[in-house]
Length: 150
Length: 159
Image (tube, rainbow over all chains, first blue to last red):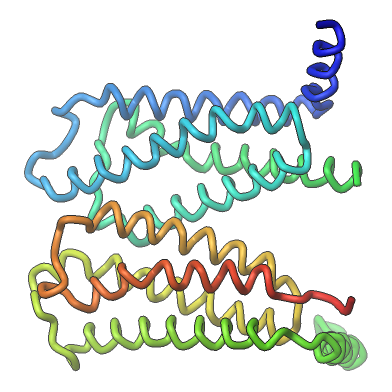
């Protein structure tokens, strides 16, 4: 039993990171959780019913992103506690994906999806660059940390 | 002349560093499969861009004008992004510098686009209504596989 506990302690090790990293970590988590809450509880009257196709497209897209958010929230802490190298790869991939989604939404999908103009989703939409900045900072710090460890 | 931002010596140094980079890149012989994959990516993306330019200019007929008008902006935006990625990919392969970083970025973007296309357009139309869009959506996994293959086959330095 004691041996198993020691083994667990060896496998799960709290990484030593800067305060800024943990601030970015908390911002990312708060953002993802409020997004999930916003998507689940969004009231129907928030949408413009005249643009049914746009609303349907948005709902389809949000359901996929919701799954993606849940997977990220569950995998990231486990990776962070077990391996800096793999958490670095994971965060870099997620950052690139978030940037791709943001640019895609702004430049390509803006005409076929319709975000609600008020409420939590609208606030989340406006603070997306902050999430991207937080992810970039975490990627940057994890890259340095993993290259130092190597 | 004092106001010049770069003098002749600095320009020469810059050109020399580029030619040195080319010499280093020439020393690394890429795998034949990698070259084939790269040619495939070029042909696929160029065909995609050409199709959308031809559709936009009304040179080839759209089977369902109304449907195309709804989704045209999406595919046109994607064709532009593909063009920039393709140009950057060819430049990085030429200098053998940052190829993997660019391929990773391109792969993630393509994956995101493929998922978005699949989610947004599934059930919206069938092959007879918009064959070009349908072919693009159906064949987008090919580009993803090609990018993954290129990522694994690329040699960045001499072993």
